[in-house]
Length: 385
Image: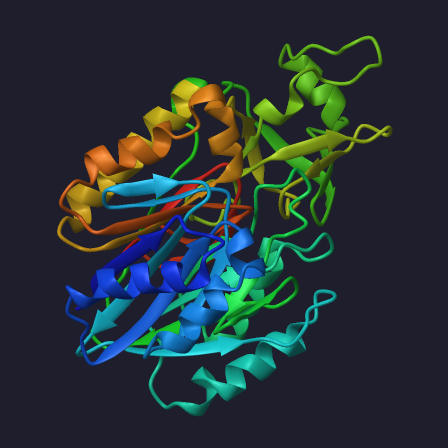
């Protein structure tokens, strides 16, 4: 069994005051034999020295990532640091970090595994991962590589983001140090049976017409039903502007079915290239079936409530780790905190930690309950511990 202990601070500039505030909050809460700290924070907490000073004072390892906004029981904000301590008498936590990642080199992940889980005879029941935001490395690379290296240990986690438009301060955190190019993780062993849930786009917001991926390369979708993506989208009634571009393209992600028995996932659509191909937020395999959805503020609220309700109904009483896409945050417009507030309302009495993500890492189930690790876009993902 895992228990969650939490603390937070809004104090960025006064390092001593920030650390003292967190330590004071922890004093009133019991920490068990095995513990690890997960931190989600505004990027300025790194530059000011708060995170490094906090790591020195804690008696357990600290890992995590920067984020755009975060919430937990009774607390939420953007310029905030939230520390979530996983603590247990029967679950063991082992932390790890890769070397500097400059491309899709599986060897760096394997080296980190050999120093941690690769040394053990028993198998980890969960990896909680924090991935760097890199233009040339996809979330699919991380989940597929880890699946092969670990023997399909479930991977749940996030890709780091921050408050800047280009996310140039997005970093992962290991101990008192931060990195723009390293994957950090904690492996959980013994007495743990995590459950996974997610929400993206409901059927009411999905076009009826289905397409088959007839041509693709990595995250570039080149053809659907034998025609270009631009022509396929136009056939659904999406309009083009005077330059020929699809209007509001980022609001119309793909719902992708791998046709392998696993649950469908979402792939956000970034742009249409001059040749009519689509640049997407993850791998698009040929032969997959896709439909087009529509992300709105109301849809974000509805699907979050549905996913949280399902998690409560199936795994009520367990602590929950939650990551939600920054695309969902932005879709909420002037009241971007609505999803955090709804989570607090629905999970009242259930310990949780939510932070915003560049790509969500979460396993999906097939009809027999078998797990496959996937990366997601425009999705809220939940791990019930």
